[in-house]
Image (tube, rainbow, N blue to C red; front, side):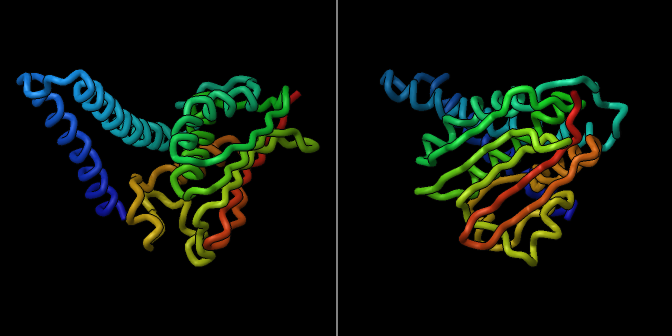
Length: 225
């Protein structure tokens, strides 16, 4: 799996770099004269650069997780505020795709944790829901208090995950091996990072999913007053 990961990462790094170099070279040589084309190519360069940034971010996050709790900065924080910021950062991607969102953020959902790590956990789960939900599709994001737990859930109407694959999806470098992933890009680190963040924060993850019926990822943290 690690060999496949390295091959996949090399390909994913090379693809956006090739596009960025091509568009930048055309603009630098003055081959693009129309303002509309300059704007279009600039948007494409920015989009491909964001792909690189996300991939590198995933690799750096994964590396940080391998160093254990010593690499974490622990503080009391409102997880609703954290998840809301993630949602605001990625909402446009889903809206542009044609997806509908429903959100619910309870106030004062306090947990003890590392903000960067928790942000990464929320980002990976929400981005996965966007990635694997086709139009027309719905995604529901909730953060709420439940007894002594702070609960975060992401529910989508996407392609779903076969029961035979569910035990493996949190493994490092693993990607579901069917047509679902052949048309989508990813490093295989997203859910591995989610698992490591959850374990470090002594949280539990549950998954309910059926092919063609969507997925429900729920993470439960220890709540603090």
